[in-house]
Image (cartoon, rainbow, N blue to C red; front, side, top):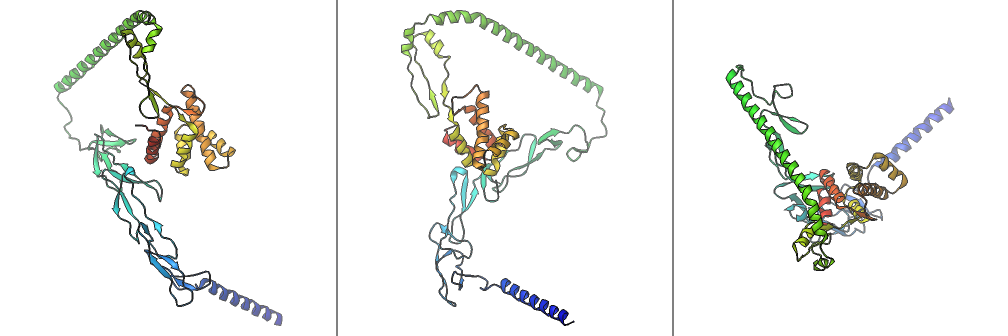
Length: 383
């Protein structure tokens, strides 16, 4: 009995000790709004719009705070020695300043008129151009700086796969868009006959026009084939000396070399007319890939390469071969570039065809990464 009572008393003592220790841990040492410095002294925090200059040195003394300098802010109470840099609204991103930067508030940027905010993630926002309703749509909500235009189908139309189709029958999916049908549904037989005659006449006229166009095309093609041998025999007589009259010079942006020629005879003009107006330069694949990785958010790189046609097996292989996320993303984009160059007839070494760059820009815009597309267009001077 004595041993049992002693055991119970020990358990009660241990429980009391643990409960008291827990209270000491939960109970904060410093009051609300203060913090404990490295010396264990409770110091007051600086209010919003101020930064800490020196901590308090003993209980009962105040910390030394000073206002944030120009173009810097602090929007909450703090014990930081530096204020944060103010945001700058960029006109290149279609941003305008709604509220200037103050000591206790960062700059507030909004989209200019005709653009709206598109939230890429919780912190990143881009300004996109407001959409316009199509001819078979009606505007339900006008575009604002916070959201895009909201379009709905016109009366007697209903939406099918993001497209407005006309209501032909008041079905379940279309009943809310079509008007009540009039009970007298029988038009006069004469009207039906007239409509059928007009429709038949239109079809006949269209068929005849198509036949005329086809015959004209075939005749022109045959005449051209007969004329080609005579032209080729004339051009072969051009002497080598006519090449001396060609003046080749470069002009325009660094991405293209334009060739112009001046000929002294009609045959020379015929040959020069076959030259291309502009010979595009190709783009270095590694330079382009690193530029894309710097502009596209990490979480959206896989989505981009899938849109560009890279298979999941190739994506998984790149992830298994390279532990570094950036290097794996580099290899995924390189697979796309090499495959595209082969389909276009092969590239030269580490160079990319321009059509592949244009495909990349289109996919970036479809993924609402217009800012990245604009940066690449600026970098490679694409108009």
